[in-house]
Length: 330
Image (tube, rainbow, N blue to C red; front, side, top):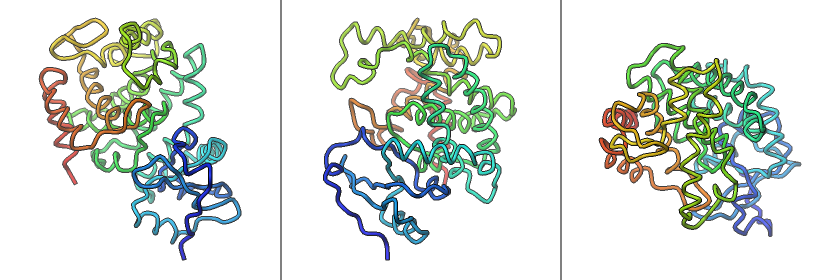
């Protein structure tokens, strides 16, 4: 018998900021199951307790959850940190296990590095974050290269909430997949692309949190600060000798547009580096399909349509065509 959902008074409210998601298939591999596990009610920001600390979720429970449409489980921050730490300790073993599906290993990687990404991103000096990005870039590229992963599979298992670790790992994964579909096969290049993707929003470290979390319309002054984050990131990284020019352009130009109406400096066309054009597509794709403080995630079909509408003006046409074609593969 599956474990029945049990209502908890404080979980029936809009508590989206109190619970952190983990892909069901990633939690399936954890050995730490002595924590409270929550499910999200369909179409709501309300959560119900699924399993408590004294009762483990068994394999038939995972199957039942999937049957009922649950691809994600939710945890309070303390429980999430415990699961993340446990997976981090076993990460290399899990990543090397080819009996585990690639997408499932990616979800484990995303969860395992969460605490490291969060703490490194907050440090005043970016050295630790760059070092972590290099390590993660190698792991993501090694895991996904080979042309066997299609974007739709990665999208289905990836997490889509407004957490730094989710966004940067999603974008890195998508970037590697798109790069391969664009004909890039050199392992070193794919690693650099994944690393650049993880670093692309490093400039947001200098944007006040109250601006990033603003739910209403931004003021002109707030918008100006947001539009400076690619420049902030470039300035922080440009003197380093462990990043390539192409990676720096991913940071500096990922919000530039083909027609020259982007930011921070309004370059366009061939002035935008190819890797920056690539990440522009997957960055917007992940941002629009993810929950943000100021809006709900958009439908997948609407996001692909948005990319197609912006093809040739906002985005590079070939990149968009390739991404949509790859996404439609089964």
